[in-house]
Structure formats: C-alpha cells, structure tokens
Length: 339
Length: 255
Image (cartoon, rainbow over all chains, first blue to last red; front, side, top):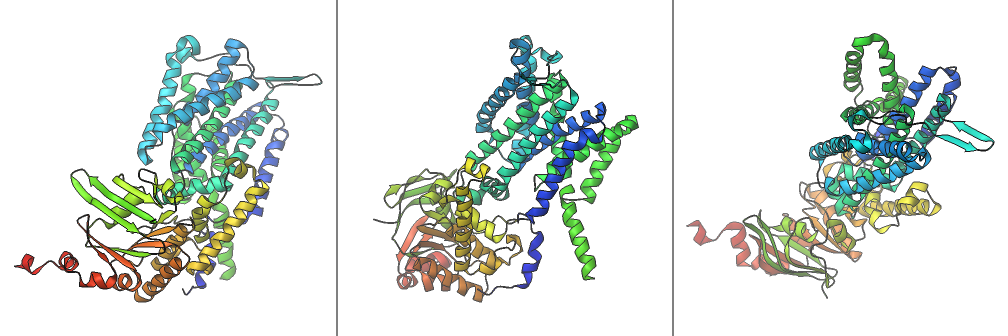
C-alpha cells in the first residue's frame, strides 16, 4: 500500500497521542512546588489558607470524577460517595472516639464496597441513562443518611468532628492548626492526583479511553468492558470518600446538605472548564474556578451571575477547556514563525 | 476437527427469524465466502458467532463449545472480527489502535500498570513492537503516528483489520472489507486477505464484490432468508440455479 508522507506533519496535535512529556513534568513539578510554598507566600493568612484547602478538596473531587469520565461516563453519585467517607469517619470519631487515621481508610473501604455493589446494576446503563441513575444513587445515599437520624443526626448533621492529631513523642502535630491541615490536604490531594495520573498513563488508562471511544470495538478486541467500568468507578469513589473524610474533619460539621447534587455538579463544571482529555484539565479547572469563585465573593449578590458568565465565556471561547491553552500558544507561535 | 462449527444456529428478533437452523463448518486455513442478498443474515451470523447477539443452537471452536460467551471471551478463543462500518478508536493514533488490540495477548496487571514495574515497561515495549510489526504487515507502517480519523476510508479499513489481527486470531471474520473501495484498494485488500491466510489464519468473508469472492475464496456459503441455500467451490456456486434465483428471481416469479 502506498503511503502519503505529507500528512505526517499534521499528526503532532492529534488527540490521544503523547505530547512532549518533559514540559508536562516541569509544569506538574512547578505546581507542586508552588502549593508547598503557598502558605509562606500568603504569609499564613487564615482566609487564603482556607481557600487553598478548599482548592485541594475540589481538585481531588474533580480529578476522581474525571477518572470516571475517562470511561465515557458522567457520574453524579460522586457527592454521595464523598458523604459515605465523611460520615463513616465522622461517626467513628464522635460515637467511638476512633481518630481520622482509622476512620478515613474504613470510610474508603465502605465506599468502595458500596461502589462495587451499586455499579453492578449501574454499569448496565449507558450515556444519559447512566447519568440519571447515578444522580439518583447520589440522592439515595444522601437521603438514607438523613433517614437514620438516631445514628447520623438526620438533617441536623454531625457536630464536633475534631481534626486529627499526630503524637509520636518528639513529633506532635495538631491538625486543628490550619497550616498543618493545609499540608495534610495538599499531600492527600497530590497522592490522589498522582494515582489517577499513573492509572491514566498506563495500560489501564488506554483501556478506559478505548471503552469511552468505542465500547463495541473494545469488547470485540477482548476487553472486559463491564469489569473495567466497575473497577474504574470503584477507584474513583474510594478517592471521593477519602476526600469526604478530609472535608468532614476540616469543616468539623457535616450534614446531608453538604453532599447534595451541587457538589457533583461543581466537580463536573471544573472538569469541563479545565478540559476533558488529560488529568491536567480537572486540576487546572478546579484551581482556577475555585479562585474565581472566591474572588467574586466581594461582588456580593452578583457572584453567581458573574460566575455563570465566566463559565459560559470559557466554554464558548475555549472549546476543549483550559488544558488546550499550551497547544494554542504553541500553534500561534509556529504560525507567526512561518508567516 | 473443524476450526469453526455451528449446529442449528438460530437467531430470532421478536417474531423474525434472522438465522434459521444454520449448520456450517469452516476448516483450518480456509478462506470461506459468505454471500447472499441484502437481509440474508450474513452480518447477523457474524454478530451471533462473535457473541454480540444471543443465539440458540451450538457454536464450537476446535470442538470447544463457545455459545453464550461474551464478545471479549470469544476473542480470547481465537475468533476476531471486523465491522461492516469502519469501527476504530478514531481519536487514537493508528499505532495506539493496534496496541489496544494487542492488549488481549500481552501480560497486564492493574498494579503493575499503576506502579510502572520493569515488567510492565517491558510488556508495553513488546506491545509496541508487535503493533508496529502488524502495521508493517498490513502496509501501514509509515502511518503509525497518524490519527485514525484522518486516514482515507480504505486505509481505515486496513487499520480495522490490523486491530483484529492484533488479538492473534485463529479465525478472522471480515464483514465487507472491500465496501466503498476503488479497484486499486480492492486489489490490495484481496492481496492482504491472502497474506493473512498465508500466516495460518482462517478467514470468513462477507463481501458483495463478486470479483473478490470468486477470486480468493476456497469455499462459498450462500445464505437467503437466514438459511443456507448453497455451498461449494466458486465454480459450483456460479452454476447453482438456487443462487441465481435468490439473487435475480426466477422466470416463474417474473411472470
């Protein structure tokens, strides 16, 4: 078969093909270095540290939801699984006095078990039906928690969820200190993002994208689509639960309302604005939108409207999201050079 | 022992019987043509054998019952297929398409992939080498980095075959590989099919281009309304009156 060589030049920007990895790695390293230096950079301002912690939660949520997206699915059950992690850890502390270090992994395991059980029927649905079904799963989790008010405090929620402490003799850290909690949140968030990055970068990631791209073909080349969907979904839900536990011990108060549909919806918006094809998308999206949202706090009642305008503008002016910006700049520079 | 054997294979959609008691055997190293008028049940046969549609009756691969298995399990049994409409991971590069196809026959463990163990890296390197070999074999070696969606139709079909070959099948089911191709593309496709058989892979071929069918098939099975109306060598099929009747109608029907 004769091969046209001329088209080979156009391939550099093709989706799904590896971009130069070195630049990518520098960007991640720079971002992580900045997050570590951030508390000092804002001279330990309490409010700005709070923003930083919120960003860490949002990044972790958006990134784990993006892992489900890489299977071609949009799950609105995410806030529900976050609630499972949060409530498990919170109740173990308030009822039994078990610290977060035990509550968080147990919450993650419980959420994982729930995710496997729920995804068995859930993964038989597709596209918009999956979306609707996952939405109701999230609602059911929330309302189930509210229903057992003897245990969970119902709609009033759980109070006094103390942050954890570390007591190793010479090293003592009380995470009630906001700087300490900031670093805790950043480290856990970084681990979650790193795991998702590795999953996506490996064969598992290729399997996910092939399912998302063409489920029929994926099945007929020997990929167990159902199994991979269940596993991917479960991992993402475990990460959501970890984030939930982290959230509960930071807020010290949670109620079913903390985990309603808006939590999932914001995570989805972060992904869409950030970009859908790389892990960088949800990370950048969650960071920038949280910053914008907090900045708009000063505008009072216009906050929601302005936020909406910025959202629509991003989607219209930057199809593909913020992650496409480096590529756009590169192309613009190349265009100038050649002309 | 036959490579593929169906016994009384039946596929029903509600009240319609798309495949009716079809018994068929394909031997090793054979190129079998599957022809028939539109709606005869050729693609339905592929869908049933490849595990996409539920069917009754029995499907055997090397005397091993495979009926009721899911598509991914059927592929693992050595039965790969392509699709009538170009079916690819369109946003992937050509190489990545074929590497996805290699997944089945290459070692994979979730934890190994997550941790990036040396073994995993070795696996991935082997995978890429195998994918490139297959691409060279089907004549797409120079297009490995091209995005699949950007290729012309004929080349996309060749990629589809490369993806199917990557699962190292004993039998390849090709659903109209030459559909929508020009004469030159058709010729190179026929040549490719012969070379695939030359590597020891049997082939079942659905095709409407009679030049291709008559040119490369050892045996031809003719379907009409879900039943087998004729079977034999190309010469026998050409002379068969039942086949003429199915395609053109008989003098009695015309009057």
